[in-house]
Amino acid sequence: MNSSFFRLLFLLFGLVCIPTLLVQAEESHDLPSIDINPPFILVEDLSANIHTASNSITITGKVKNVSHSIIRGYATFYLLSLEGEELYSFEEEVNSGKGFAHGVTIEFEATATVADLKKIGSISLDFTQK
Image (cartoon, rainbow, N blue to C red):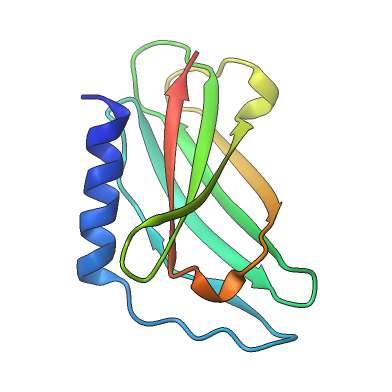
């Protein structure tokens, strides 16, 4: 299965399960996530915190290697509207670009500055192997 399939699945899930999110100036709050896992990783504890004072979003979580080999790659983070449309995406290397073995869980944190945080309704993550 390719990443387009997973992105479509993320969007459909978001349309069904993500509640309305209100963003007020000068506040920080959590953002709902859509947890869909490619067959070789398991995404755990995916969450986001919006910081309206700095127009930034911080995404944290863990990825666990459930394949039977060493993998390396990068995460693509998608910021979605309430309707599930992609507003913004960015990539970050996982584990500083180093491979990690079967059963190993890697924590990550990624921060991005976004012009209009009020439009963001949910987040999703896709992992791409190198």
